[in-house]
Image 1 (spheres, rainbow, N blue to C red):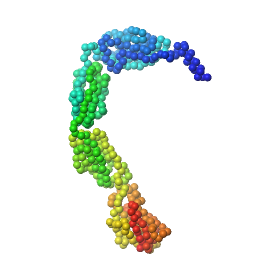
Image 2: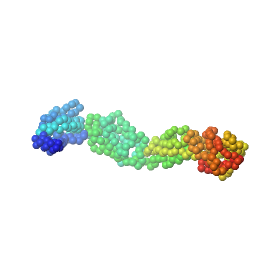
Image 3: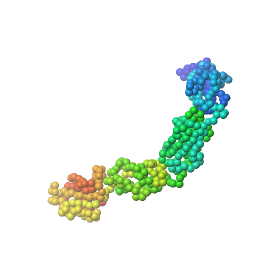
Image 4: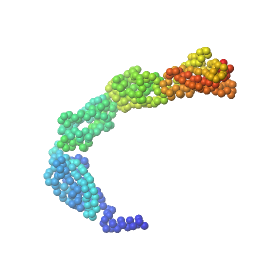
Length: 437
């Protein structure tokens, strides 16, 4: 029921002229474009898409310059309101058309506008500033060649920097001369090889007196030198270190400074050749850690070209599989065994079989230092001992284990049965037969 009452109310208001479904809020102005330059005798006006109430339409209108509001009168031709300044506009002077406020139409409907358009006026004889580029448009640039823009009149340097753009984007140094008539741009690194650069100044650019630029405001230059841009062609990682191979001969000092590894690890770098950088850690890689190898784009070739992009790769060192060098035991058992054969049988003397004499300690020497608890635990977990004969005899149990340094592990077992009991000692998947005396 309520929706029918609402609909009836809208129809009633519409019939009374209080709701206008056919009205248009649109207006158009001249000037209409940002920093438009008006020709001599060109009108300044506002055109309405409805019948405005004149006093409110005129109250929302204003033209300003640097000194304040510009005085003038209005004339009307149907829905077009034209502004006539009391004094002629100054040549090459910056003005602002402001149309802001509430405007009523003839039926009492209110509309709100907020329009700001800067513009200029010049006579047919007025000369706007021009700009030339060096090297000429279409020329080839390379390395850190500079590009110079020369203006016929002093420019607004801050405004010009904001209006300047280059595509594709590249970091540049921008240098003005003292007279603000010449802008020099230089790449912070180097122009990228085989790239077309487009240099553009927007319409916002103007002289220090506010006169906009006329004529050409966009140029293209091509970058090519014959030398090749360097890049990282491969990274080889091993237990010994990292070798980074570059596509070109490199500047050793600048490229070495561009290299980094994270997390940080002590080591030293050296060059195997002008294109191969080697990093060797002082100790072992840390077990289970992912390292990030980075070469920043500041790396430079011997020909003076920088890498286009930063390079990064990640790796986890293979330090979790140390190899067993020897097994040791009691001297009376002819231990230690070196260069052993996994197929051989070891005979050990565990005493009388009464606790605690039925114990035995093995020592295991590995080919690398194990620096972390995680590495050592992984090695310890790879060693196991179980009973093969006779059936039903319990497996020996670990009493304790300790490391002598970082490459020698001692494990003491209890529960051996003397007199020819056979056990299997498994180390990193390989098995050795152990027999008790």
